[in-house]
Length: 252
Image 1: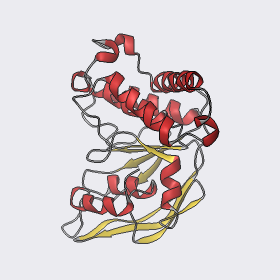
Image 2: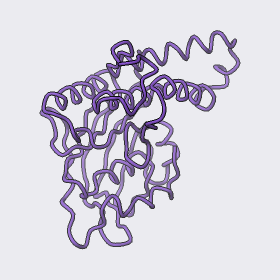
Image 3: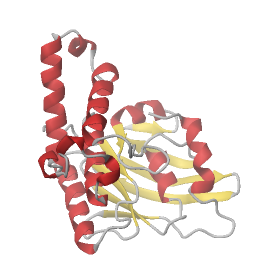
Image 4: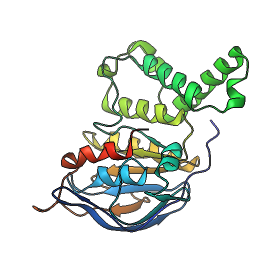
């Protein structure tokens, strides 16, 4: 699949205060297009909120940031159009009752209806269907998910997927929209050392193909650009306590 040019991401003294105090603060970094950026820190240190803020899904309260040349929070709508979410608990989770094929079909349908240009929508239906199939096939290949290797191929339920397979499916769904930025939460959660290596190999391949990757983790891999969040304090607001703020920026 031909990947779009990645989005540069930069922040300076970037921060967010929640109802009960600091969520994250003083985040400063600069990432070139096509970078693999590891947002490293312990659970509750604001990692997920930082991810959502940099993708235009949560409104920051301090400092400055730009994603793909768009200012945050002023141009959050534009950022959401170029940034796709992989797995983010409570925000973009897989439905365990759906099959893999149902998830892929739904995402392709939504992309064709709401993410396509007017010129694309005016093409013959057969041509649009063929393009959608090619887009899905390309996303699956980029995510390294082989449907034939699943227990029931495309009819496999999400609840029956291994953790790494579910990650690959979430990444494939995000890549169907050919984003310039891919954001993934809890990258290394509940993975063995070997699975963790394969997960980072996947995300590094996405970045090498041109799409910038932001990935939350407890331990960053070698070679990634590392952005660290400070451990939570008694005065800090955890990611979970700040989840309601996500609605202020709207879902994409």
